[in-house]
Amino acid sequence: MPGFPYQPLPASALPSIPPVPALWRFPAEAGSVRRARHAVAEALPGGLRSQLGHDLGLVTSELVTNALRYGARSEDEELVELVLWTADNHYWIAVSDPGAGTPALSPPGPDSCGGRGLVLVDALTAAWAVVPRSAQGKSVVAGLPIYGD
Image 1 (cartoon, rainbow, N blue to C red):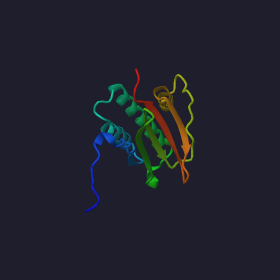
Image 2 (cartoon, helix red, strand yellow):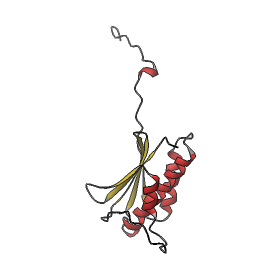
Image 3 (cartoon, rainbow, N blue to C red):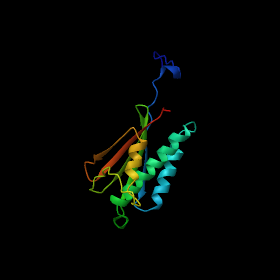
């Protein structure tokens, strides 16, 4: 175009593009736990500390298991939603389901065969919370620091 000189900026002069959250939806069935864990592992960069990748996989498994066990029903063809993103030097995971119940941290008894999922989430994460969804259900959001020991 005459009178409109265009000079491209060098890439170093451009702001970094923020990461787009990864989003998956899984059916309310047992195989979704493995698929969710695998999806998160595939979304992580190759140079990620191995312990952080392991911890993210474990937190994903526990949160998706709880969502399937207490929040979504396969007979109603309900879905569990998983979102993964980075912010404030943390990897954040949000697992959402349509259930009305609110997860609560309560240590299991010594003879209990289950009930340790949120205890593990609490031990592995820097922060976690239950957030009500506007339409129906809730999201459990947990953050793990990217940099650490």
